[in-house]
Amino acid sequence: MKEKEFINIIKNTLESEYIGDDCAYLMDLGIVVSQDSLVEDVHFKKEFITPFQLGYKSVMVNVSDICASGAKPVYLTISLSLPNDIDTDFLKEFYQGAKTACSVSFSGESVKIVGGDITSADKIYISVCAIGDAKGRNISSRKNAKEGYKVVVSGLHGSSCAGLKLLMHGKSEPKKFIKVHLEPQAQVELGDEAGLNIKTPYAMMDTSDGLMDALSAIANESGVLLEVDFDKIPYDKDLEKFPNWQDMVLFGGEDYGLVAVVPQDFDYGTQIGIAKQGLGVDLNIDGKTIHYSKQDVENKIFNHFN
Image (cartoon, rainbow, N blue to C red; front, side, top):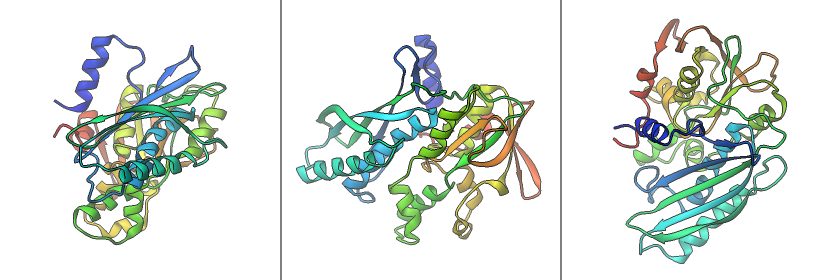
């Protein structure tokens, strides 16, 4: 049973109009809400990450979803489940990291941590609820891509995957990749520009589960074909020193870039493709075109339940 199957079961059981995008848009309240979790030995290992970095990353990965909706991140609650061997120094450093991430400018203001919960557990479990201000903004949905729209991205792709590979193999260089993996940066600018300036429906997601995952989700939810040129995708050229580096660019997760399928007159981000009639993703790479169906992509991306 895969994560996406679980989500479909939950959505169908609840008969919910809100479940589907990474943020629930509560129009009557003028907010978007998202919740994400980090679990020890699934999303991180204590030997690879400091408490400060863990707090920092916990904030950024949740704020990224708010940015991808086009809303402005404003509030967070953080719930921690901790084993008995965790000391007060860990807790202090964790919240220092979280506070530092919150101080990054999001539309000119800091995000505020306003509550949460703490309990005991066998491992470290972190669950963050993020709230974004949707007033005066056009909120995205992965269902809103249209034929003729262009595909744009922000951020570099594949760097976090490279950082994880280095850590897993006991290597410490190049440090820039490890830093990207441990201290990701939410793509605030594209989220702001889209939310404030696009007046028609549009689609946007972050690349937390990989660039191809976001492209595939938007294509299949919107009922369009996204034609993408690999050579136009922004990535650090030092990735080419890694084996299977192209797969890292396409399928490596936790970069927290943004992918948006937007009207042609939206002038922000790097254009990598266009939306056409059809379904799925056509990738132009190495002089050939490879078609990816929804199942093709799901077979290659990270699955929490394997």
